[in-house]
Length: 385
Ligand SMILES: Cc1ncc(COP(=O)(O)O)c(C=O)c1O
View 1 (tube, rainbow, N blue to C red):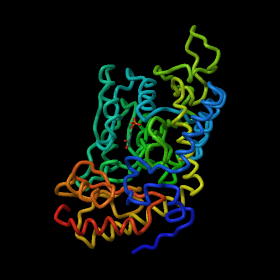
View 2: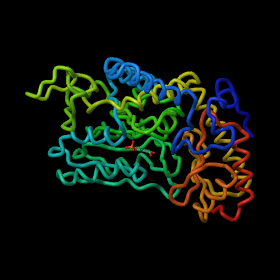
View 3: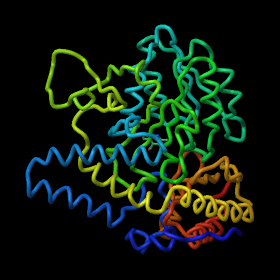
View 4: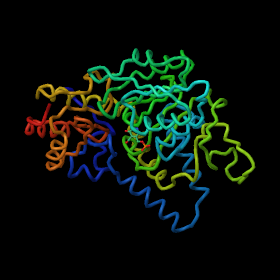
């Protein structure tokens, strides 16, 4: 088994997360664990509101601090980031900027999160044609399948970075290259990756990246981001907009549409201030640990888990090659609801999608967590596929 290095990771950070004192928490793919720091950030927001009433200047500064934090996590510039309330807002903003007359086609992988698929299909009302790219029998989605679907009528290609259903990591760089060869744009929904892997938007060459703070960024719901590659901005005008997307927010001008020159043109209304306080606190924990160190830590834990699952004879839906997976390991089950419940009864928190048990690993997990879930699965061997 692979040994896991600990620095500001694993046991060194566990006391920051009260739930870990009593629960084997393997559900960061759904919601990251609550930290003392995030709880204090909410209290700070309430205290400022209580003390000073409307703290608009501070709140706008906090929104820009979140923009800068997202940019650092993506190795991008703050001018390439919109602060959103969700992935949904970001994707809706993108499609609202597309010319679907000249290029009516939107290509999506079968592993897109429902919101991406539903927004794509909603564009059929505007004349869009949506093409799905199917996975291989092993659950991977090969770039060649994307190549077959993309053509000169394609406006947008959506390829999620890490599948929320199987844990496969897709070859975003190659899919972006295929999209660009046909003159199309490429979106990587990276919610299941950001905070748990080192993510370089520019190196991947992708046009848009979206995600949020609920999972591996350790914040709460109601805060997300949209990265827009800077070179694209002059040609992209979202028609889904709002006053916080205007070039001068406080001019209060209702006579025209004058969006910000940078990616803030994809912001919308009043920023989600409480969630920004929480998101900043969560992201600070990630930045202190460092995404490269987190990625190594999580990869070693996932390897330990997959090795143990193989010894158990379980069917693992996620690839064993660390380059082809992220923090999520999915295991086939004959009755996944029952399996989640029996593990929960032992205070082991996992989740489910399709017929897969989802075990997700993050900076605060340790080898003992992996061994506990393996023991739980050994005791419930009959529920494994
Ligand atoms: C891959 C992925 N995309 C998007 C979402 C959520 O989208 P939204 O922020 O619009 O709720 C999730 C989380 O549940 C997800 O796992």
